[in-house]
Image (cartoon, rainbow, N blue to C red):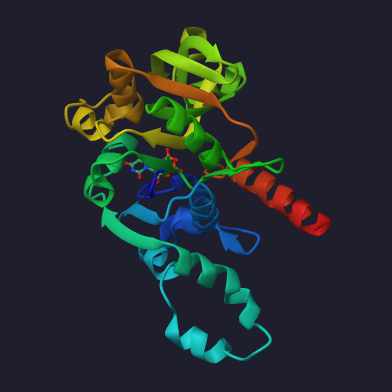
Length: 275
Ligand code: UTP
């Protein structure tokens, strides 16, 4: 059973400026819940209880969100609006929360490495909350990945098929199909030009990583864009052992982009109307 989920959330979110000048991107709401809340829900559904966040300067709203707001609680207690806090209260009592900071924006690999002390020496999940995932037909994406980890005991990344034009925005995997939705990774390229992409299988913001990733990351040199790339570290893990790419079931919205954020808002609004 995996205990910890790490949420790298130190990025500046420049695509949402000026909103993200003083508001963490992860606090942008889809309907009434911030993106980070959906991410924590997904981790909890997968059985994880320790929620570990890598934040940065200007991201205190994330810590406050998972803490008690005494004034608000006092004001709202006994009123007709109290039920609006039920969901976050339940989430808070089901999990523990810890925070650390990434002092410099040196890439996702560096952000994950910054969370080493919060994770310890065990396998863990990673959720990028700006990738919002939903599976209306069954288990959430992290839960699906957790079942794969339990079987194969190696790092697992979630992938989806994307079109040629957008492949350059993703880490891309190639390898041998082993079991329906699984690919044993033999190659990974970060943000390739469309002509150089080995496949159209793009990594999205869901990972399960074995703890040796920290050792690998500590010796991973900056790669594409001068950043320490998690894909470079995962490729080393794949070459030394096994890393699996999993074609997840469900939908994923790129809420790091304005178009994806609007799409997710409409989708969740229509979903709520149906209920
Ligand atoms: P993005 O590439 O979306 O960058 O990072 P960003 O800064 O959040 O957003 P834009 O591109 O400026 O609009 C993907 C994920 O990795 C985290 C981000 O917080 C986001 O969840 N990340 C990225 C870090 O935590 N640290 C980094 O150094 C880089």
